[in-house]
Length: 297
Image 1 (tube, rainbow, N blue to C red):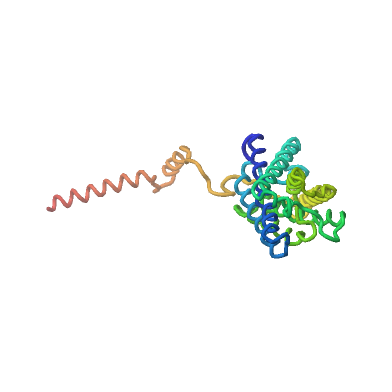
Image 2: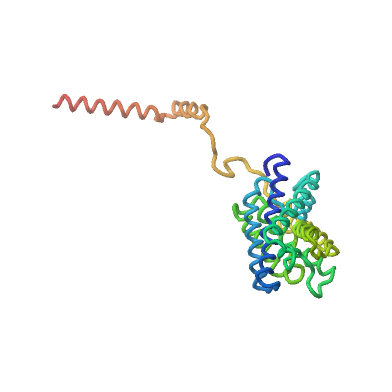
């Protein structure tokens, strides 16, 4: 991450706003143009929309703020000592503000249809899914997400350039599985923003289920960080930093002492010649040959 805290908070707010706008917004679009019905094929397009916007936000703001765009990610990274706890409240506040702004933009774009039947793309438990099952499913989905983040974005040995793509696919994968049961939030901000926007415009909002979308993602995210540190990349097995030269190409100008040592070595070894002596002798020999040829002519 680079930049001061205010700039990073703006990046988090914009990133979360885009996530809600194009992620939850795809739910509204599917419901509006599907006459209020959402089949599994539509869920596939919703998953793709989430995957694309997550990847774009990571590539756009990952180097600025880390592109958490998810309070569960921020808390888990802080629990794993990879993010300062002092900045956690500010990050979460920025993410919630951005999510609410995304919900407002959905309403602005779709009008009343965003509320009914769209519900601003909010998340709710499916038929037959109880509170405990919802927490378990959300925890499992967020576990997959954080495991991918740890492997592709946090681990310094991860292949460069793949983080956004693979994290986006992880989001799509969990929505494929969790979508019919919990709508696959794995992000408290993604749930909070549409909830608040929907309530503001008089929509039916299941606030009693908000705890599912807070407890599940936070539990799953923290557990994934712990498991990754203990099982996948134990700290005791991380390689020690190596000196330049063993790690890669040596950069910088050659020191003057190296040339002096070469000259001294040439004087000590019989028959050895320094490179400048070779160049001088070649020039003298060439001049002599030209002089002899001139005399013959």
